[in-house]
Length: 466
Ligand code: UDX
Ligand code: ADP
Image (tube, rainbow, N blue to C red):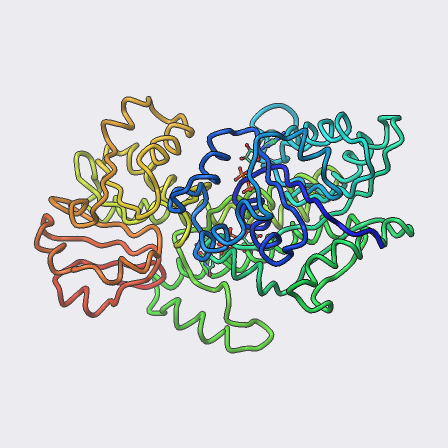
């Protein structure tokens, strides 16, 4: 079996960066080069100050510190890294299309195609090309078509190796993966390529955890895994609405149903709605694929998961408006958290963006505090929606770096991200600095209801009557 000496990863984002850092750390005999066309991003990965890495993940900076410039390199020299590599991971972004056919549903594959063309142009020796990005089923075929038609004699094996890490726990998920999925052709060279990639993961995972499938099963499994996970959240969120109008408590319901070993306890936390770069995009993709094959009922079934998620975000915002006497115009609302979940600086599809947008339409003033998200990012997220002018967003929204300051003279605090530090805040001091009645809307159910009520707050949380 061929041995791998050089790996190149195209795309130094939330997936490529952490995944390659762990591979380099666990495989000291392999040189791993992560390349990106974004020079600022590469500079940040190379920054001596490890707190400036472009991705925040617990445990990441320690691993980067150990391996960087030994066998882990970050570079903008894409062609050179492709040329030298035996194995190339494609880990570029595949956002939902914002134009043309499939707009709003299909994945935009232009970045993937550019990578494939780049590899085809540069490669002089045989390569194993691994799809890491989440892709619609049968993308591997497009990559194969581009690579196999260069006529320069280079042989390629295309594998699908979807990433299942969750942000905020990426390093742990990589080190202790439930499973690694490798899809590839069932030809002798395809099987050999799958075994070679499996050998990389076997540096730290037992062989039984590596599943080998055909290409299409692997690509589809990624979409289906995310659709099932998101479906659990939409299911419990739909029940949270029912709990709020009855005397039931969604946490008690989650616990009760999760004890059934057939259901299991994980991913049953009601929230203000799921966010992140994967769930919505992957379900939309699944819906689009089903429609393409004429499977209307299947498409509608999965589309409902997204609809409930949109409903949950809207419901949370509308509850704030109704509770604040049907008007938030000119009222200051403190947002605790902007990231789509705790322990990440990623804000893609974060519920906070949409809740803010609804409240801003009602002319609320919003003051945001998030321990890891920058002011520029908050404005960029709001500007991207195009609901109002950039000036208006800057007039109505302020970003501060102190949660106590955010709450000063506020009518309400809304908790959008479940950062641990919010539980440890001096809530009495917060209460004293706010307008009365002082409202707290807990979209993550992280605070103690009894203590909050005793402190004097009008405390509301998802999935429970007041
Ligand atoms: C997800 C998948 O978990 C991962 O396997 C895949 O590779 C990428 O997509 P990620 O989006 O990073 O990972 O985070 P995840 O932990 O799945 O959370 C997604 C969203 O669901 C977050 O907004 C989170 O707050 C929310 N969530 C999660 C809930 O609202 N309730 C839950 O019980 C769990
Ligand atoms: P993910 O969460 O999937 O990792 P990101 O957006 O965080 O997505 O990262 C994808 C990275 O891929 C970006 O930094 C982007 O600049 C990079 N990228 C996109 N296209 C190319 C390309 N053709 N060559 C090199 N890098 C690319």
